[in-house]
Length: 145
Image 1 (cartoon, rainbow, N blue to C red):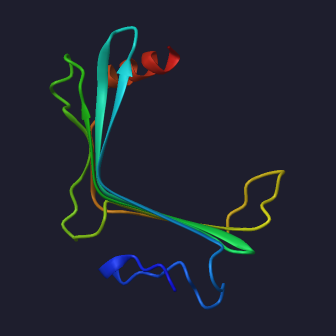
Image 2 (cartoon, rainbow, N blue to C red):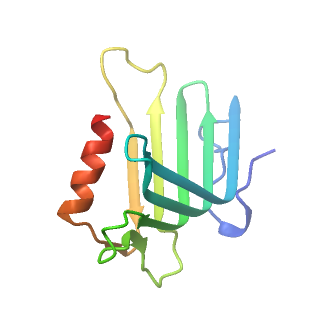
């Protein structure tokens, strides 16, 4: 049978034009937290909280498909000296849509000399972005480590 993604009414991994998927992977997480830490400063730079995360991967004989959805996103600055910009990124939409939706389709076999996609669709709900020079400097220093 088809893999259904619940009550959302969106497409399933079994599509009449492609037939039954050879591989189907569905991952659903209620909440994920990620931290970026500076080892040399022994300090957390940012904390990202993602809610209602779902990932759906399907592989057919002639194509593969990836769908990613994040219901809520918030990235907070954890630097002690950056209290004036506490929220770096957060969804502020009131539409009820996920903060981020992404759909990618690639034909198989994939080419080895480059990267080719049939479909790349990204949908974002209203987002708030707040960064400053001090935060960017700290992140760049951490990345160089």
